[in-house]
Amino acid sequence: MTRKTRVLVVEDEQSIRDGLSDVLTYHGYEVEAVDSGEAGLDAILNGGFQLVLLDVMLPGLNGFDVCRQARDAGSTVAILMLTAKGSEDDVVEGLRAGADDYVTKPFSIRELTARVEALVRRTSARQSKSIAFGVWTVDPATLTATCNSKGGDSCELTPRELALIALFVRERGRIVSRRMLLKEVWEMSKADEVETRTVDMHIAKLRKKLDPDTTLITTIRGAGYRYVG
Ligand code: CA
Image 1: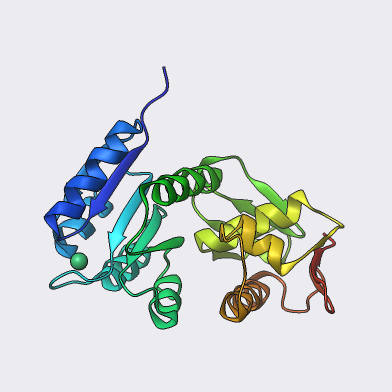
Image 2: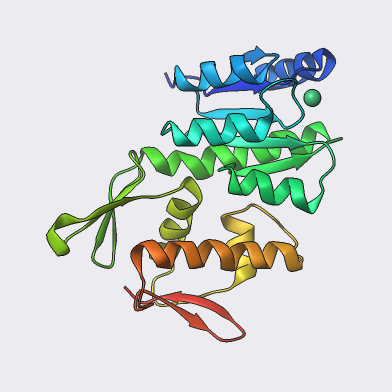
């Protein structure tokens, strides 16, 4: 028997909170719901959740604060932000704060459950075995990369960086387009300018950590990136 996936809902509006809880429970998730950022952070740090649906607009500690503080404390839980406006600023701030994905309110139940399923699937890699990435050994469970030479230097990765690495390793030697990265790592079907820049920003950060001389991930002008490992 497989254990149910545990989902935390952090939403101050009762009707939305109850609606989300009902829908997710109906779809087979084990749901816990809280109505404030403080209670949400507390529940996240006490662990045991695979995914958090985190509203941005909360009284007191807002969704960005909760996300940042959870990541700072080392939480690797999957975080799906519920943004009210869907503005570029909200999206970028959410991703910078360490969110894995976002859904814009008002959302349809179908869209939300699809995003939840996809995110659970994508982030379950965090519990899988280690990945060889060039001179690095990446441990998905702890989100760390340890260098096989250089005296075993190690550095921390974000969940998104782990997903990028997993995709590059899978597609070793092949060109990976920004569109494909957006589709698979960000679960976005259509890309706009902002989202393309987001990909480049994440690749730049990943290179800074693991590939400062860009020998692992090369840029293919006009096409995307290629992992040559
Ligand atoms: Ca709210």
